Length: 219
Ligand code: DC
Image 1 (cartoon, rainbow, N blue to C red):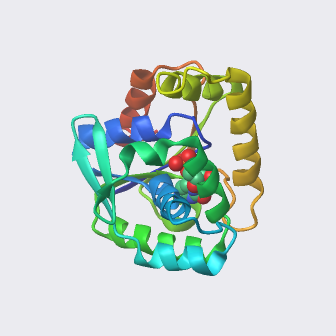
Image 2: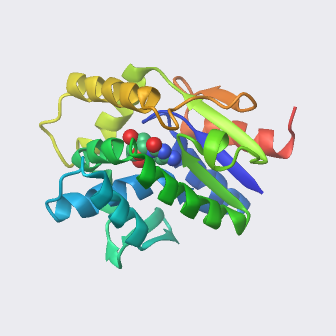
């Protein structure tokens, strides 16, 4: 069983995907963390993220491990705990750059398919239901207003950075949407057979329930 959850930044997909995976006792695979890992390694090594050949080399050699824990999961990149660093906005911006590179996508999509073939996974991203696993058993597409998504991101990050400006965060969310939806390869788009869930006014629990209900009792 493969459950695909796609949607824009801040739509709640990773939080819900984690909870759904826990409930079903499936593996949760955060494909955004894979693109973020490539950017993180490149930035740490002072490489130019526009250098597609160098980025593909990182994607090819990257060792990435998802280890479930009580709060979700730990992400090990080449054996190093990168969980907190990967959430960083600078890494997120870098991830959008490398995610637009064809060779990086090819390499990471191949890995995602390999993982999915082992079965019983909840995978979240931008192109899971359209490109990675168009034959997924269940597809969801989360959406939410940009203001609400910005507010969620702000709440998540403000404890680490009290200087944060909500208006700037919302602007960044809009910019990320633009990049994700307008890139040439695998742009963010809803699969025809995906169930759209607008999470703007729903709690995490409500969205999780809706997803689980649909998996158990498809209509
Ligand atoms: O979901 P996220 O913010 O962690 O994703 C980081 C970047 O990677 C974002 O710009 C979208 C991109 N991405 C993608 O293109 N395809 C995926 N399957 C997952 C993420």
